[in-house]
Length: 329
Ligand SMILES: Cc1cc2nc3c(=O)[nH]c(=O)nc-3n(C[C@H](O)[C@H](O)[C@H](O)COP(=O)(O)O)c2cc1C
Image (cartoon, rainbow, N blue to C red; front, side, top):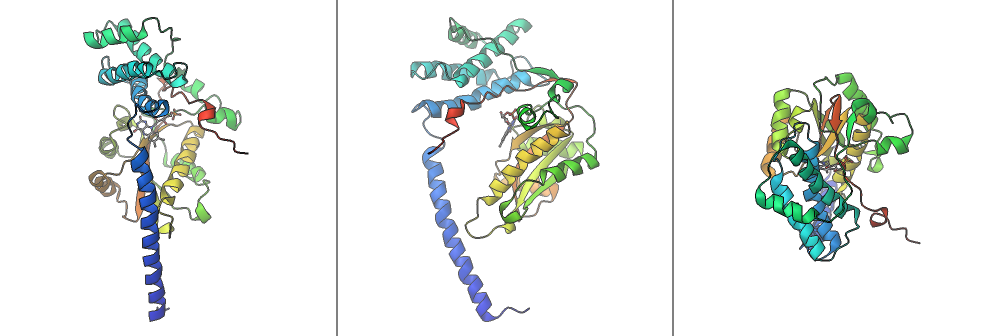
C-alpha cells in the first residue's frame, strides 16, 4: 500500500520524538557512567575491591592456564602485591573473601614458582615475602579436575547443575558437530526476550584460521581462545527495537549468552564468555570476517570446545551474598 503524505509526516514526527527521547536517555545513563566508572579507587573499599579483583583474577587465570609458563603474569602480581599493601594501609577489611582470595592467588603463584625452582625478580620476591609474612592465609589452589568430575552434576537438578558450571579454557581437538551446535543454540533460544521479539543471533566460527584471527581481535582470551574448537559470536538485531529501547539489545544478548553457557554445559562442552568491547576498527574487522550486517550489535564472544581429559578451572570467588542482595520491605 502506498504511503500518503500524512503517513510520512506522522513517521517523521515519531522519529524526531524518538531521537530526542533517546538522546536525553543516553545522556542520563552516560553521565552516570562517567561519574561512577574509572573512579579513584582508593576512596572506598568496594571501589578498591572491584579493581583488585580484576587484577588478581589475571593471576588466577595464569595459574589455571593449560599451557602455564613460569614467570608469566609477574607484572600483574607486582600490581596486586602493591594493591594488597595499600588495602591494608587504608584499613579495609582483611576478612573480606576477596582480600583473602587475592592473597591466596599471590601465595599460590609464589608456591608454584618455588616448586619449579624459578626465580622471580628479586624486588617482587621481597615484596611477596613481606606481604605473606605472618599473614596466615589458608592455602588454596585452582581446582584441578577430570572431565568426568567436572560434568558429574549434569543430572542432579538445577542447583547442582548451575553451581558446577565454570568457565573452561582447556580445549581438546574433538570436533563439535553441526548437529550438536544446532541442538545447543535451539536450547539457548528458550531465553525470554522483550515482547518475544527474539533478536539474538549466533555466528559459529569453525575454521581454525578464522578462529585464530577472531581470537587475536578479541585479545582477552590469549592463550586459550585460539585453541577453541568453535567461537560463537552473539549478536542482537537492532531493528527489533524501537523508541527508548536503546539498551535492550545488550539485555537481550546478555540473557541469551547465559542460557547458551548453560546449554553448552548440558552438552558437556567447556566454554568461556569473552568480552567484546566493540571499538570501531575491531568491530569493522569482525563484521567483515563473519559478514555481520550493520543492523546487528555484536554482544559477546564465547569460546567453546570439549575439555581436555584433565584441566584446571579458575576459582573466581563470589562476594558475600549481602553485597548482591537487598530485600526491601
Ligand atoms: C562479559 C564477560 C566478559 C568476559 N571476558 C573474558 C575475557 O576476555 N577473557 C577471559 O579469560 N574470561 C572472560 N570472562 C570470563 C570471566 O572471567 C568469568 O566468567 C568469571 O571470572 C566468573 O567465572 P566462572 O565463569 O567460572 O563462573 C568474561 C565473562 C563475562 C561475563
